[in-house]
Image (cartoon, rainbow, N blue to C red; front, side, top):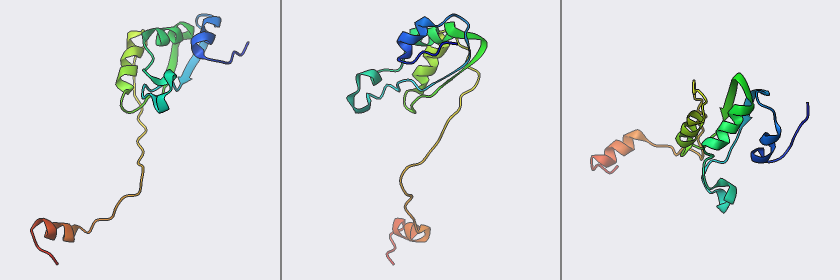
Length: 114
């Protein structure tokens, strides 16, 4: 098996149809991360259609997406011919939670100072 490295938009054209059992990718999220030109939009239908071409029948596609635009990616994947069966979500928190004295918050909301 020949291993190709590089931008998949160029490399996938070198692969034969029905080659891969699974595809795992972390494409651009469309956030314009730090003004990067490669991240101005979520990949469209043609991007995902090329993955479908090189995937064997029944192959899986796992594609990571950003929280704000994952739905656009999912629509493009489906429009390219993939069947969406499940979606996985990774939830994570950032920062440190602030403590709250509930009794004092209730007193404050009722106008009691104490």
